[in-house]
Length: 77
Image 1: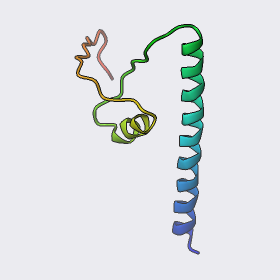
Image 2: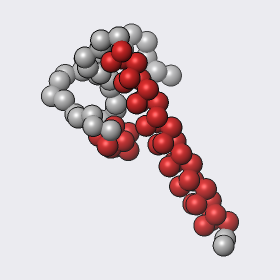
Image 3: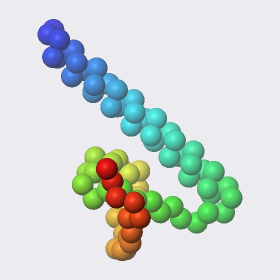
Image 4: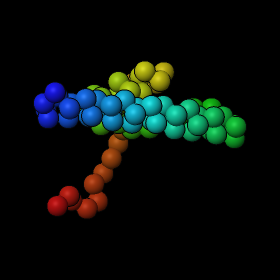
């Protein structure tokens, strides 16, 4: 096996582990929020971050028809 193939396998394994940890963390966050009576979770994901959107959709989250308003107070460098 070449270095390139080994690197691909390593990165694929890391991605799977990160997703597994992400699922565990989200399940715990949901459990804690339910325990204090929180009826719903809302959060933001950048529209160009397809991988993250797909991850959350696999956990049952849906894109909702809302407007997110923002105002930059200090410009990025």
